[in-house]
Amino acid sequence: MHSPTPAPNPTSPPRPYHSEHHPDPPPHEYTNSQTTILSAALRHVPTHGFTRDALTLGARDSGFLDVSVQLLPRGEFDLVLFWLASRRGLLRASVDNGLFEKDERVKAGLKLSVEEKTKLLLMERLRMNTEIRHQWQDALALMSLAGNIPLSLSELHALSSEILTLAGDASVDASWYTKRLSVAAIYASSEVVMTRDQSPGLSETEAFVERRVEDSAAIGEKLTGFKQCLGFVGSTAIGLGRSWGLKI
Image 1 (spheres, rainbow, N blue to C red):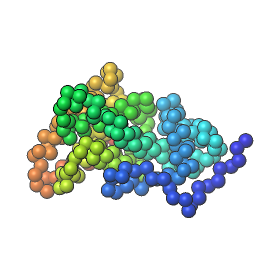
Image 2: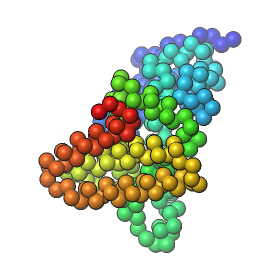
Image 3: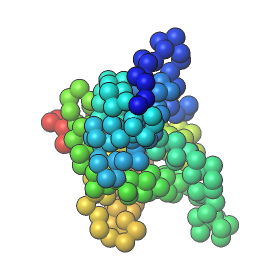
Image 4: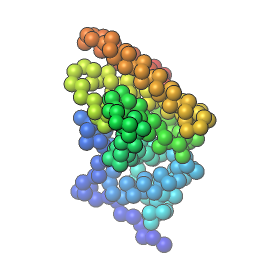
């Protein structure tokens, strides 16, 4: 029998897992013990979903007692947040491993635009949900709870900022915000489409992403004034919330 797991040392620095590119890191980070449990629990999500059962199995796999899941104050929602953050890390790794260079257009000697890279990154991230997409509606339900909305939106913003940074976006004006909200809205709505997509290779989801990115680019070209940008930010934020089923 394993001895009881001691509580995390409050003097030990927590392990941050936010993107270095995000200007305002999400206020959720984990200790080594929490990270170990969550990492192991992710392996059980395809079968058990984002549930306490998955957390308990992750704790056992890591040599902790079942009661150790109490180290995670947000419970199942911590598992959702950890999934989102760890996939962002995998997205960066995909780019480092030649995501863009493997594209047929690049092999043919063409240079990808920021918009084209954004599409590739969105689909790469969505495909990471393939093995758990049958569980994703439950994750979205957790994210939509009133107390979880701020961290959910913070993590989604971190993803959209990451995508645009990896795509090479160099905006420094008000469009910096509108682009990130646009990408966040596209990703959130695409996740919902993906959960229902039965087409080979998620081709229906990819077509949806293609249309949304093109529509977003067309809207961006028409936004020139600061007041217009503010109006767009507000309408996009409302649409983003509604795409998750929020009462806005």
